[in-house]
Image (cartoon, rainbow, N blue to C red; front, side):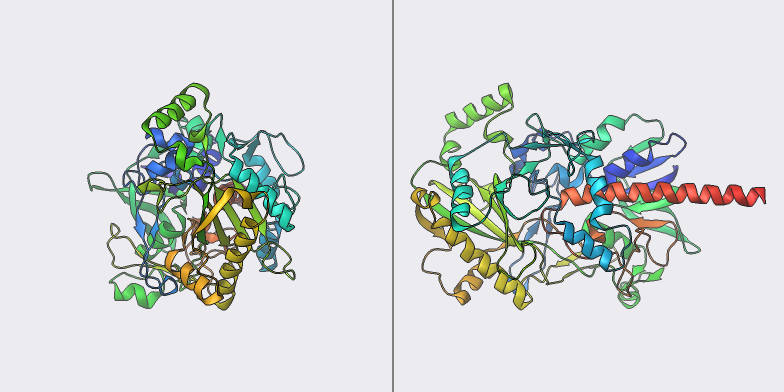
Length: 542
């Protein structure tokens, strides 16, 4: 196979680029995806993430190394291995982050990445059911809708937060993020709108677009300092090469993209040589700068029914399924959380530094079923952690998962913030009208009250909220992997376009920013192609 552009990874950003680049019929695009087609019906049912996460048919099923900040615990890190990538497995929550996140990127020397630069891209991508306005688009491919489900305990949480003094915010993706309200989600008429559904399915029959599934990329071919193709293994283990006459674009996420770079000899030279890999480009920043949002999950028992009670009996589950089948309504339309809040842990902060995810159910693990009592969950995470981890190769074998070292709670700020987040959760729980619905604090429990005890509880129970970023850092310093146009330093014809390029994690869920990055990368690639064609034409004329 030959193509002008070879995109590795059909996740949130990869699907966008496959669509936008192949819109030019003169351009040939090959999209490689290690997973299969998104045919599993649970992918398209919003609550189906209960069934797809940790399912090896659609999930990479990564596991972290023992983490010192979590008292040596390992965490499961689900990542999509299917068309749509993690947008086919995630909790459907549509969150852009704060304008200040992107303005800070611009202040770091990354021209073109400020809020005024990226807002038009968010709007272009979006088909917002509320309609278009200064902050939202209504003509894009990605459907964004309001919740189709409400539960009294979540309504009471929003009201109690206002009682404590936090403002109600009807649109955290609008003029300001701060406040409490309800999540927006990537769904259309009660069905998930993944990046594959939004961007890939409508154009999959284009003659100039070839989508190859079960294609596990193992190496980027680099000749004379230029990326010229990608080697991949098919489902039977056979090796193939796709030649790239224009560019190779990695969109394999914060784990897959740095792994593929290192397997191709692009990374810290000394480490690569120790694994027997020939060095193509000495870039020590590859795999470094790993960031993630860590959530502490408080559980409160209730004196009235919650979703725990609704799903425990076979009859009720059948009724829920029938309601979804007939009306695309009910609990099966539920995203990962219903209510949310973006709040500050200290008055001196310019913007919120914690986020709440409020769920009308509780469980030790979604795959294990809900608790046998009425309860709800209040998850709180720090939005801008200072801790930095890394992705590292274990060997030169592409089939072996890399070592994931998140390094959670490594700084005093991170530790202090998660403790204060837990205390804010308790203050909201103690306020009316929520307080009248709570019979007891189940986790961590009232016996855990001092800062040391709350931190220890977080170390023992906190978990990922599935937002790994930063491992192919965009920047201008020596630790940067890509420049502001997402070009890999030291290798021509190679870019990275996914959440791995974030110099700092955004203040919120990461799927919407990943799609924006795909839009931004598409524009830059098209611009560079036009410039090159113009220069070539001028040269011929001369």
